[in-house]
Image (tube, rainbow, N blue to C red):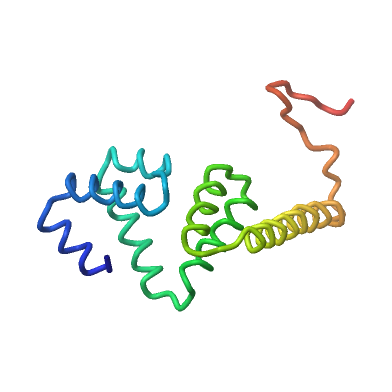
Length: 146
């Protein structure tokens, strides 16, 4: 369903019925409904606006849907979002991705996530600031250097 059809659907069926149908379609297409969609559906306007935005982005994309899912999988993995990773892995498989492609994007995501951690930490270390005199809040206790 394209963006314009989605808008007509909402106008014709109303937000509650449209939300129910879209959640069913997501489950049929991808095998499950993400928790965030279920929670958004408690306020249909939130879910509908999210799905309209997502559809308008993907509808105008020049990327193959398989690659959109592989990119989404890599981002979910890099953000340590297990549910995102699982969902987008299933969606990528449903769109023709191979196990080798999935393993490759996860490897790339891990490499970039690691590089991001290192780059940020090295910049802090190399900043020359004397951060050790800062007050730290660890586990609810305040520690000060004597």
